[in-house]
Length: 173
Image (cartoon, rainbow, N blue to C red; front, side, top):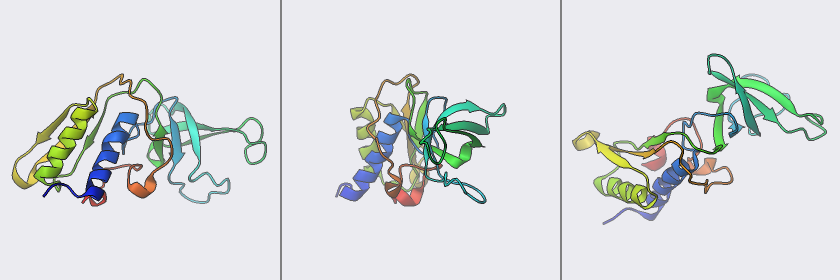
């Protein structure tokens, strides 16, 4: 019985990401450090995979302006400002204080896995709630606004499925 160790690890990574403001689908805010996850078309400046700080938003908030630090070579001494669609970046270091956030775990979690996630949320001081019934039952963990939790994630963890744009049921199935 119980939850397999590798499954426990993946579920815990999702809760830790929420604590740090770097959960999948986290909306970038000014001051956040983001990584470019997709460049459509040519990428002559090799921006894909680079990290920069969000310094502004387009009026419709569908695009943001990111500043890349100058390295004296690729971006000169002053760095580079680029406007990019919000969906083409992921938050890797959230500015404090954190806003509200949530992670909705898929209905594919077993009852024991949902119980494990409830326990994780409680240990980290985060509210959680299950919704639905039977095979459509799922759990959501919430981060209240102005959370003072510090990020436990300092690198990028794409190989573990933490960074991305949507909760991937396959990553935790």
